[in-house]
Length: 225
Image (cartoon, rainbow, N blue to C red; front, side, top):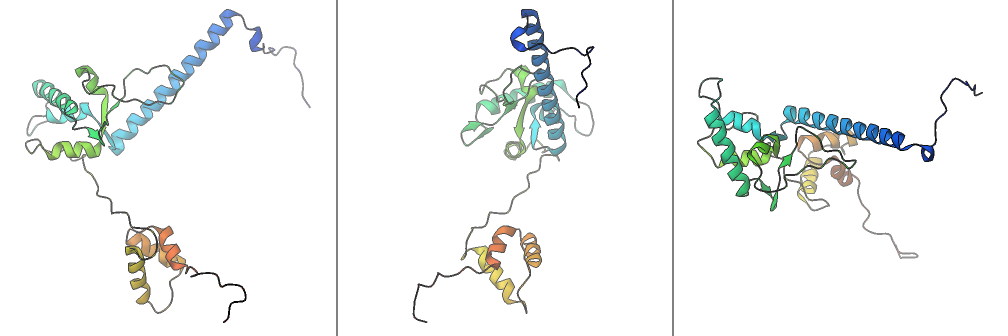
């Protein structure tokens, strides 16, 4: 049962809006989009400061500007570090597969309804824009690897991932699985197979496929036994 209250405001259809009402609603929509994008950017920045998957150029410059054995920062060293980073971008040290892999996250947010996809527009950015640029941690580890005179920060660490195993029977996973099964008195259960796969850095899906025998072929109709 719907109770109608005459004191409630009646919504006006959009085709009956006045120009001032249209301008007001457009401004409200733009403000909502801007606020949502700013929240997404702030959430992404906070997550990267914790996970360090992407590292800001300003953090690297601050690390290079620290004084040995102290917590002070030298502004001359910071400016020199920014100049070196700009040169590294122009020489392609932050390229991945022939493409510049640097994200530009400005403090202010453009108003656009599309998803946020920021990328450094050119290989020669303005020095002031470098403080808002981010690069993946693997590229930073490569950048420090060729500079022995600059100590690498403890939060720039790259964990080596195990090589992906080939799928299918006859691969390394199949041989290791068969050797493990041959050492057992009875066939392993699915839970034991999952535990073995996790201990040896194998995919549980591949091990489950190896555990289930596949038929060699379907016998022909009326074939002699």
